[in-house]
Image 1 (cartoon, helix red, strand yellow):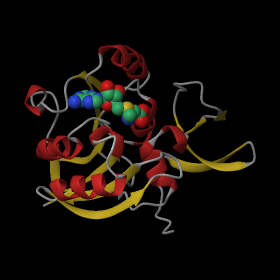
Image 2 (image 1 turned 45 degrees about the horizontal axis):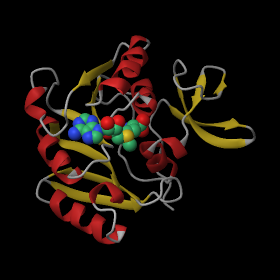
Image 3 (image 1 turned 30 degrees about the vertical axis):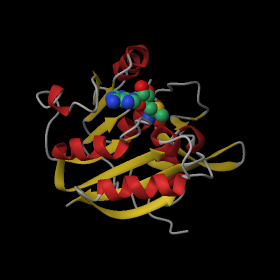
Image 4 (image 1 turned 135 degrees about the vertical axis):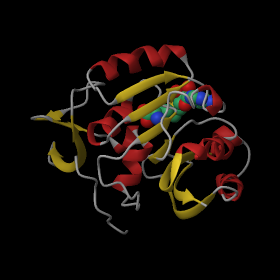
Length: 212
Ligand SMILES: C[S@@+](CC[C@H](N)C(=O)[O-])C[C@H]1O[C@@H](n2cnc3c(N)ncnc32)[C@H](O)[C@@H]1O
């Protein structure tokens, strides 16, 4: 396993005798703390799993971020703890209510009740030339969503994406589903790394890519 460096603002800290990822910020979902550090549980976060598995995310800390599929803010709260401006898109109203509460404690986190398949509905709010696009939408057409949102990324930016096989097709072999997603992504991105996240999230693939 390649151990890439963690971004500034993410550290391995000891929780119950085990080294786990942690960020500094106000607690969000009852996660354990160690002083001002709060546990970032890779079992509850695909991006956390990608970091835990040593994938080359290219994150160094302080990046500008567009996060698609923010849900109630579990992962994006950690992202905002070590990043610059962080735009969080989620289309389900119920989790967005929680997300707004999470953003109250984080001045750099901007929740948007929007559909990630329709980036034209938030181009006027989200800045362009962003450093990072994080995607965890778990919906059919995951590659299309990433391709449509490529417009927000700087040419040297990074796509950090988690693909859930069953969201595309419940019956097909996950490997075949991932091949199809990667192939569609290649219309707009150069794939830098892929890794199965099964140790933490079954039938999920982590992808690191950059715009073509
Ligand atoms: C697996 S959950 C995200 C979990 C979250 N990323 C985390 O780690 O805390 C997927 C989320 O994507 C949202 N989603 C699915 N399709 C979407 C779309 N087209 N636009 C915005 N959000 C979408 C779902 O409502 C759901 O909250």
